[in-house]
Amino acid sequence: MYERDFMEGTRGTMAVDWEERINVQRMRRERKDRALERLQDSELGSMLLINDPNVRYVTGLAMTGGSGADHYTLLTEEGDIVHWDTADHASNQRFNCPWLDDIRYACPGLGNVPRASGSPSARRWLKDKMAETVYEAMEEYGVAKEPLGIDVANGALVEKFEDRGVDVDTNAATDIMLDARKVKTRDEVECLRQVAAICEAGFQAITESATPGKRESEVWGDAVGELWRHGAMAQGGYVTSGPNTWPKHQANTTDRMIRPSDLVYADFYNIGYLGYRSCYYRTFSMGEPTQAQQNAYEKARDDLYDVLERIEPGATTDEICKGFPDEDGEHMNWYDADDFWQMTTNHWAHGLGLQLYEVPLIWRGLSPDHPIEIEEGMTMAVETMQPADRQGVRVEEMVVVRENGVEILSQWPVEEITVIDY
Image (cartoon, rainbow, N blue to C red; front, side, top):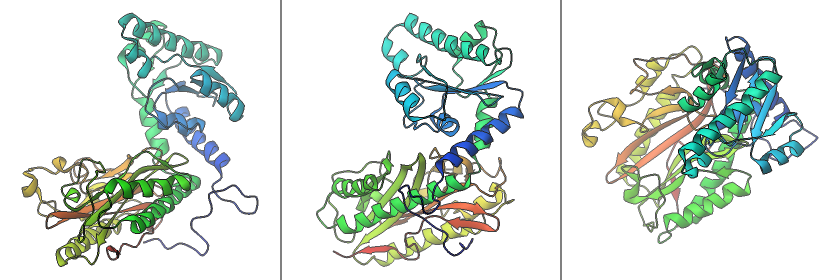
């Protein structure tokens, strides 16, 4: 495992002039440069980015929803950026975002507005107007005769560009952005380190809130309040307890009352800090755990660290995934499953960044036949689980790949299950 140097680690969340923390100006610049470098190495003259994380990566704008296409961005091979957004957003961006000098009003050709219009002719008109606004900008910036990459391949929208003589590529832009985003800059890593620390504040809130008779929803509410207090956006996650911990409940916190001897499982996924998403699990025991609970926890923890010790630059995902449980360890008979691909989300590692799932993915259901190489600077969450009688435990760490292994960004104690004394 990577050992931090003296003084390395999480700093504060506020802006100060007396030490360097997350340098957002540098982060915006380096992200754009990475995307631009790959665009310039391609056959494209420009990319139209509609997918929210891609828009944020290139522009620095706080895209927090889905790909509704009421905002979209053009990046040209010369590094020019044109951004389109809804009226109020565009007006605010013109005032608050001086690093962008060409912000225009969007015509939403995809997503919410055309869906709500209820009219096929309206949907056609919206797509045509959207294509027209982008084509006009392409002409202004001299890339209208060059191939255009689009990261959301909507056939009807592509047709509107082709009607204007644009050569559209529906694969290259996605590949360019995946490649640009897979290795993180130093400031991106610090964002993930910071969101891990915020999640730990949430875990602490759970230890103080959870008591017999308290509902899962009340405990989760206390935890979310702590996350928001530290500047996070809580766009996912949940707390479950007792029988809701195995098999994993349907990603919902319920009104079930917590009882003595329960396991309590906290899933802090999609907690965002400056857009960077967490995926960080811990399991708690209401009072001293039973022997079965201790055994399950130790097995899940050991499986997790078996995988972590295999991750280093140059390692391939087909070899790393062998650290995850085999058929028996996956309890595939219990699930009545025949293949690892049927065990999605149970034991795997997935990339973290502006999205919850990014490159790389390490998983027995995929990696043996489709391996990729691990690179220094990749960030990921590694997660394992085990049943304990009629309940279950889950543990997960957030890590960044360093030159000689992984640095663990998550710091909540993992050696033993956290006991909540009530």
